[in-house]
Amino acid sequence: MAAVTRHEIYRAIIETIQTVAGLDDVFIHLAVQPTFNQSNDVVAQVVPGGAEAQAPRAGHGLVEEDFRVVVWRRLHLDQQARGDERLANDTLGIMATEDGIMDALIQSLPAEGASTKGLVFVRWIRSSSYSDSPDAPGWILGEMTFRIGYEVNWPTTN
Image 1 (cartoon, rainbow, N blue to C red):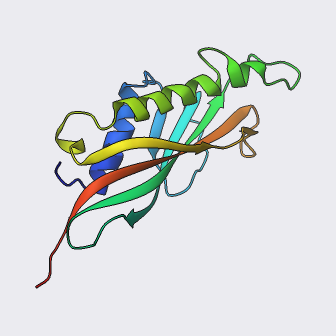
Image 2: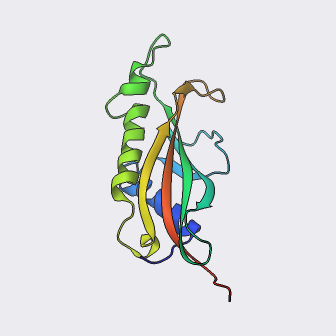
Image 3: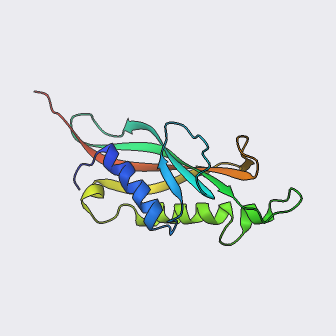
Protein backbone atom coordinates (compact mmCIF):
# COMPACT_ATOMS: atom_id res chain seq x y z
CA MET A 1 0.00 0.00 0.00
CA ALA A 2 1.07 3.57 -0.58
CA ALA A 3 0.83 6.50 1.79
CA VAL A 4 -2.12 8.87 1.54
CA THR A 5 -2.78 12.39 2.84
CA ARG A 6 -5.62 13.56 5.08
CA HIS A 7 -7.10 15.87 2.45
CA GLU A 8 -7.23 12.93 0.00
CA ILE A 9 -9.00 10.85 2.64
CA TYR A 10 -11.70 13.42 3.32
CA ARG A 11 -12.19 14.11 -0.37
CA ALA A 12 -12.73 10.34 -0.87
CA ILE A 13 -15.17 10.18 2.08
CA ILE A 14 -17.29 13.01 0.70
CA GLU A 15 -17.22 11.65 -2.87
CA THR A 16 -18.20 8.19 -1.61
CA ILE A 17 -21.16 9.53 0.36
CA GLN A 18 -22.30 11.61 -2.63
CA THR A 19 -22.07 8.90 -5.27
CA VAL A 20 -22.15 5.42 -3.77
CA ALA A 21 -24.81 6.08 -1.14
CA GLY A 22 -27.16 7.35 -3.86
CA LEU A 23 -27.57 10.63 -2.02
CA ASP A 24 -27.00 12.97 -4.93
CA ASP A 25 -29.40 15.50 -3.45
CA VAL A 26 -27.50 15.64 -0.17
CA PHE A 27 -25.72 18.86 0.55
CA ILE A 28 -22.50 17.60 2.10
CA HIS A 29 -19.27 19.28 3.12
CA LEU A 30 -16.49 19.32 5.69
CA ALA A 31 -17.10 21.23 8.90
CA VAL A 32 -14.98 22.16 11.89
CA GLN A 33 -18.03 21.56 14.06
CA PRO A 34 -21.61 20.70 13.13
CA THR A 35 -23.60 23.80 12.22
CA PHE A 36 -27.06 23.74 10.71
CA ASN A 37 -27.79 25.38 7.37
CA GLN A 38 -31.07 25.03 5.53
CA SER A 39 -29.90 24.28 2.03
CA ASN A 40 -31.87 21.15 1.21
CA ASP A 41 -34.13 18.53 2.82
CA VAL A 42 -30.97 16.61 3.78
CA VAL A 43 -27.81 18.22 5.08
CA ALA A 44 -24.73 16.15 5.95
CA GLN A 45 -21.45 17.34 7.38
CA VAL A 46 -18.21 15.42 7.82
CA VAL A 47 -16.34 16.52 10.94
CA PRO A 48 -12.68 15.40 10.99
CA GLY A 49 -11.21 14.12 14.23
CA GLY A 50 -7.70 13.99 15.57
CA ALA A 51 -5.21 11.52 14.13
CA GLU A 52 -3.32 9.03 16.30
CA ALA A 53 -0.20 7.10 15.31
CA GLN A 54 -0.49 3.32 15.65
CA ALA A 55 3.16 2.61 14.83
CA PRO A 56 6.57 4.24 15.29
CA ARG A 57 6.82 7.76 13.90
CA ALA A 58 9.73 7.19 11.52
CA GLY A 59 9.54 5.64 8.08
CA HIS A 60 6.30 4.01 6.97
CA GLY A 61 3.52 3.99 9.58
CA LEU A 62 -0.17 3.61 10.30
CA VAL A 63 -2.43 6.40 11.58
CA GLU A 64 -6.02 5.99 12.75
CA GLU A 65 -8.55 8.76 13.00
CA ASP A 66 -12.15 9.07 14.12
CA PHE A 67 -14.51 11.27 12.14
CA ARG A 68 -18.19 12.12 12.51
CA VAL A 69 -20.93 12.34 9.94
CA VAL A 70 -23.73 14.61 11.16
CA VAL A 71 -27.05 14.42 9.30
CA TRP A 72 -30.01 16.76 9.42
CA ARG A 73 -33.23 15.52 7.78
CA ARG A 74 -36.50 17.37 7.20
CA LEU A 75 -39.71 15.53 6.44
CA HIS A 76 -43.22 16.94 6.67
CA LEU A 77 -45.15 13.65 6.80
CA ASP A 78 -45.44 13.26 10.59
CA GLN A 79 -48.43 14.73 12.37
CA GLN A 80 -48.96 15.71 16.00
CA ALA A 81 -45.33 15.50 17.12
CA ARG A 82 -44.91 11.84 16.13
CA GLY A 83 -41.62 10.75 14.66
CA ASP A 84 -42.60 7.60 12.76
CA GLU A 85 -41.97 8.91 9.26
CA ARG A 86 -39.13 11.30 10.09
CA LEU A 87 -37.26 8.42 11.73
CA ALA A 88 -38.24 5.26 9.90
CA ASN A 89 -39.71 6.05 6.47
CA ASP A 90 -38.14 3.53 4.07
CA THR A 91 -36.73 6.15 1.72
CA LEU A 92 -37.09 9.58 3.34
CA GLY A 93 -36.47 8.91 7.04
CA ILE A 94 -33.22 9.75 8.75
CA MET A 95 -32.54 6.08 9.52
CA ALA A 96 -32.61 5.23 5.80
CA THR A 97 -30.33 8.19 5.05
CA GLU A 98 -27.84 7.11 7.70
CA ASP A 99 -28.00 3.48 6.56
CA GLY A 100 -27.09 4.59 3.03
CA ILE A 101 -24.14 6.63 4.30
CA MET A 102 -22.94 3.82 6.58
CA ASP A 103 -23.18 1.20 3.83
CA ALA A 104 -21.33 3.46 1.40
CA LEU A 105 -18.45 4.17 3.76
CA ILE A 106 -18.04 0.65 5.14
CA GLN A 107 -18.45 -1.24 1.87
CA SER A 108 -16.94 1.20 -0.64
CA LEU A 109 -13.82 2.61 1.01
CA PRO A 110 -11.09 2.02 0.20
CA ALA A 111 -12.04 2.27 -3.44
CA GLU A 112 -9.67 1.46 -6.23
CA GLY A 113 -7.92 4.63 -7.24
CA ALA A 114 -4.97 6.84 -6.64
CA SER A 115 -6.53 8.89 -3.87
CA THR A 116 -7.40 5.96 -1.60
CA LYS A 117 -4.70 3.34 -2.07
CA GLY A 118 -3.26 3.83 1.43
CA LEU A 119 -6.55 3.51 3.29
CA VAL A 120 -7.56 0.83 5.74
CA PHE A 121 -11.26 -0.05 5.75
CA VAL A 122 -13.68 2.30 7.50
CA ARG A 123 -15.19 0.98 10.75
CA TRP A 124 -18.41 2.20 12.32
CA ILE A 125 -17.91 3.08 16.01
CA ARG A 126 -21.26 4.43 17.26
CA SER A 127 -24.38 6.43 16.49
CA SER A 128 -26.01 9.05 18.68
CA SER A 129 -29.62 9.24 19.76
CA TYR A 130 -31.80 11.22 17.41
CA SER A 131 -32.97 14.64 18.47
CA ASP A 132 -35.01 17.49 17.12
CA SER A 133 -32.64 20.13 15.88
CA PRO A 134 -32.64 23.00 18.39
CA ASP A 135 -31.65 25.38 15.57
CA ALA A 136 -34.45 24.42 13.20
CA PRO A 137 -37.98 23.29 14.04
CA GLY A 138 -39.10 20.33 11.91
CA TRP A 139 -35.58 18.99 11.40
CA ILE A 140 -34.21 15.88 13.05
CA LEU A 141 -30.52 15.43 13.84
CA GLY A 142 -28.41 12.26 13.93
CA GLU A 143 -24.69 11.64 14.24
CA MET A 144 -22.44 8.68 13.42
CA THR A 145 -18.80 8.16 14.37
CA PHE A 146 -16.43 6.16 12.16
CA ARG A 147 -12.74 5.21 12.37
CA ILE A 148 -10.44 5.10 9.39
CA GLY A 149 -6.80 4.06 9.15
CA TYR A 150 -4.26 5.17 6.61
CA GLU A 151 -0.58 4.77 5.85
CA VAL A 152 1.83 7.67 6.15
CA ASN A 153 5.49 8.25 5.35
CA TRP A 154 7.39 9.98 8.15
CA PRO A 155 10.85 11.32 7.58
CA THR A 156 13.60 9.16 9.00
CA THR A 157 16.43 10.61 11.04
CA ASN A 158 19.99 9.33 11.16
